Image (cartoon, rainbow, N blue to C red; front, side):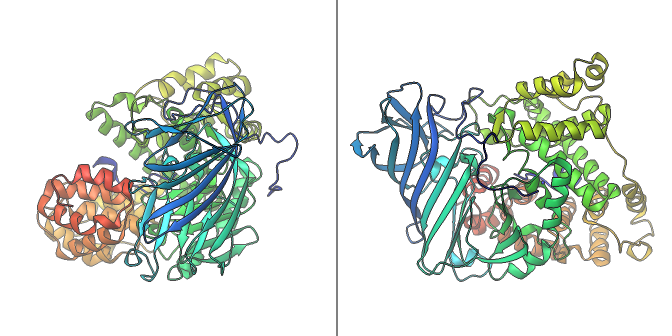
Amino acid sequence: MLKNICLTAALLAAFNSCNNSPKEGDNRTSSAPIVSKDVHTLSNADSVMMKHLALDIKVDFENKTISGKATWAIENRDNASVLKLDTYDLTIDSVVVDGKKVQHSLDSMIKFLGSRLNIPVSKESKEVAIYYKTGKNARALQWLDPQQTAGKKHSFLFTQSESIYARSWIPCADGPGIRYTYDARVTVPKGAMALMSAENPQKLSDSGVYHFKMEIPVPAYLMALAVGDIEFKSIDSRTGVYAEPAMIDKARYEFEDVGKMVTAAEKLYGPYRWGRYDVIVLPPGFPIGGMENPRLTFATPTIIAGDRSLVDLVAHELAHSWSGNLVTNATWDDFWLNEGFTNYFERRITEEMMGKSFVDMSWELGYQTFVSNVNDLEKDGKERDTWLKLDLKGRDPDDGLTDIPYEKGCHFLKLIEHTVGREKFDTFLRKYFDEHAFKTITTEKFLSYLDANLLHGDSALYKNIDINAWVYGPGVPANCPRVSPERFKKVDSVAALYGHNFYGKNMNTKEWSTFEWLEFLHKMPDTISIDMVRKLDEDFHFSNSGNSEVIFAWFVVVLKCKADHKPAMIAMEKFLSTVGRRKFIEPLYMTLMKRNPDLAKAWYQKYRGNYHPLAQESLDRIVKDAKM
């Protein structure tokens, strides 16, 4: 999952195709035993093996529900008398075990975790069918009315199952260490297309019934569904893009190089093992940058800039096909094993595609993000959350979705690369992905593997790396690597002069990338005059920018000014009315609440319905006392 990309300093403050079918000896095993206690699942999948899910569901836009049957093939290895599954706001109509209806029970709701579903089973039980429907508080689901879509004509539904939200639309064992295969039959209104994290159709079904198959075991957080007015366009023989008809041509242009990204990733760390790699551009309400659902990355439309300048997001989600989807963190306390590795891999792909001078800018922006996030967490008394190994017991696992797993994780890997040499580190990573393919891993098991296969107990290497400071210590370690991008040095010199009889006409910005514009904007003074804000807009037309990263950074600069710059405030309201990405909307509302709470409340009341339930939860806390 891409949390942050191309961040400005202001936000820092407030990614050989193989046969799809499993082969003998390739390590694909459904629901391997949980290797570490997962405190965020109420299931007993460590005793009862979840082998395969057969899903038969209907999507009802009128009532905004998903209903149907989830049939689990199980293996009761420990002779448990009860199968325990995770649910969240699900209505369980009935349960059938091996063809016989049984009496089930639901425990009381536990904050964050939902309600445990208890189903009586025996040692011989093989199949459990659960008839159910989703509730109005399904945290994974966003139901969009036609006006909330790009086309404005048809309803749309999409899911966001990470971290523990799959349980709100499927009764399941919802933990990253629990893998299973699945197939699905999904019935949707005629005229709509359905897509899942599986083998997908490329054309509309006349019947409204779609069939899916995922024969590689995946955890529940990678279960995904999208339904709406969707079209497909091919990029090459194994990549393509889905989007609403109003967006499909723009999306296809933007993702021209996705096939080349897959090839670049394979060159680094081995074959892409999932068959096809496609991307769907979702409506604006999608709350995050991207989600690495196998075979079908979910992406925010905010990366459609018209000049392919923001597609490093796709590199991030593609990298998850190795780090995360292929080798998965066993628990959410080990989240850095997904995101730190993916951030590192993303930047290696970007370097392969764009060159070192370009990726150096990404490393520097990431370092700034890391430092700023540490400062914010420490200021809030959350120093423990700056460790790589998290401690989320009794908490919402989303509390761990800070920049720490991403940036501290990838800088730790960069330090190891610098210490042992890139060639050795690449060989190690290739071996790591191969030997742990389709398995889960804890932090402790990774560190043991690191020692056995790369560091070999070398005291000098251990001293230079200082693993404890990174994994089990707070803040920014003293040996954190940092680059000094040459391209940023030029930008910084120009930014220092701007406003001192030095304006846009004196600057040569024709070849500037998004990164350079972000660096320029975050170098603007904390106290900025309305005259300088107006001059910046006059010189560079920031208020009319089609680049979501740049215009967001611009809004942050504008909000530092005590006076309102009307063109920017008009653009900001339009942005907040059409964009649901939490990375952008949360800091904007947070700043607006400090600057003009009445305006923040008015805008939020007006546009709250456009945001995903997860975004609404966090924004409700930010925009206090707003009438909903």
